[in-house]
Image (tube, rainbow, N blue to C red; front, side, top):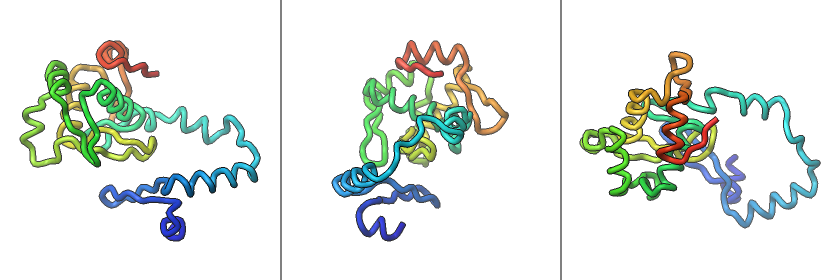
Length: 180
C-alpha cells in the first residue's frame, strides 16, 4: 500500500481511526488500468460474492452511529444534493435556504441541530458504497425524523434499516427516490 501511495496510484482518507483508500492520480490510474485490462480475462458478470453483496441487508441500509448509511443513506444524500438542499464543500455539507425549508417542512429539527456541539453537516465516507452520506447533527436529526415518520424501521433491532412501504412512497414523492 505504501508503494502505491508513494507512486500516486492510491490516495488515503482518514475517518477517525479508519483509513479509506481511493484511486489516486487519474492519469496514472487510467494508464495502469488500460494495461491491466489488456492482460486480464473478462470477469464473470455475476458470482457468489457479487450476489452476496447485492443481497446484503447491511449494505442496503444501516445506521452509522446516529445517521443513515449504506445505499439508503447515500441515495438520500445524493437526492438532497440533486435537489440543491445540500452542497458538498470539502468534507462538509452546506445546507441551502431551500434545503432548510424542505427539511423543516419534513419536521427535521434544524435549529437544534445547528446549536449542538457536534459538526452540523459532515460528509461521512460510506464503507460499502465508497461515497459520502450525510452525518453530523443534521444527519442525526434527519435519521431520527425518518424513524418517527415511519418511513424507515430497524430490521434487526440493531443497525440494519429498511424502508417501509409508506417511506418508499414518501421518498419517491418528496425526493424522486426509487428504492428497492
